[in-house]
Amino acid sequence: MKDRITISDIAKLANVSKTTVSFYLNGHHYKMSEETKNRIREVIETTGFQPSTVARSLNAKQTYLLGVLISDITSAFANQLIKGLTEYVQQRGYQLILGSSSFRNENERKCIEGMYNMGVDGFLVQPSPQFESMWDTMGIDKPLVFFDSPPRDTSVMYVKTDSYQAVYEAIRTTVKKGYTHFAVVTADPETVITRQERMGGFRDCLNAYGLDYDTIPAERDTSLAALREAIAPLIARYENLCVFAVNNWLLKKVFLALEDFRHLIPQKLGLLGMDAYEWNYLVVPPITTILQPAEEEGVAAGKLLIDAIERKNGEEHTCILKCKINEQASTARQ
Image (cartoon, rainbow, N blue to C red; front, side, top):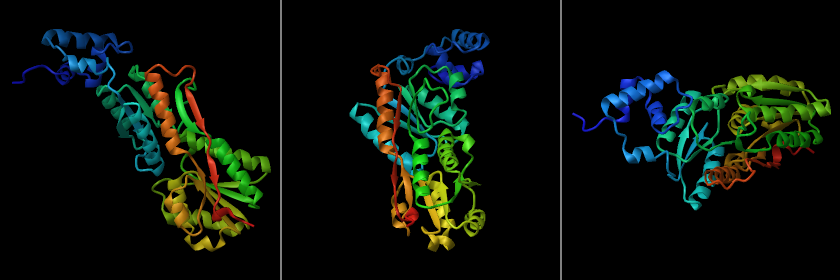
């Protein structure tokens, strides 16, 4: 027989999750129904359950642990951001617990619940569109900082780059080089706020110059052949076409799809993307990209969260960082 009753036992007997029991034990039950609270209370009284002092103190005292939730942990952007974040928080005596959602809201919930039960002092999240509404239902009273994708609730703490302005400036630069038609390759822009901002900068700049553009939808599973079939007619139709890929994983697919047309770069065909990694410089021609300060974003997000935990924020709750344009041969039209 087991020596003592555990939270798992209480959860099973009350027909609730372990997270719900943990919330109840730590006083985070103001959004919990009376029926649920009564059921947990009755099970605890019936079993004589006594939670350990250590378990109950995890959420009551500082653990110097920060929960970090990344949408795509395999991306180079995430790697650079985590590098800057890790170096900064360790200097201030904190450690990270890292999770990856793979853009799925159900994974976000599992990660947040797990990190909360580990007693993290706060959260850094690259959110899906459903995250905010999910968070509102969880009743977690811990500091939260969004990064990369800003929240719709602008009163929430966040760190981001000036995606809209950066794309606007990059497109204006290519217009001045003589490109007269544009194509944007993007995954569904409505699912991620960052994509919406980039599309907004792209569209507004071209509208200001009275230039037309085509939109080519592409996802991670879009084949190179499908991309080639979508882009090839535009190359044949327009004398000076510039193709913009809204993120780096799409940029790589576009570059590979353009294999038969690279001899046209940059005089008749321009290529522009986001973020510069090693492969961008090694290919021929090297690719012009908009650089996001990923490491700096990690540092800024860590500072914002730790200052909130230690109540040192003052009035600061946002940070917007500037991007740079790294001009290379792929748009060097004379």
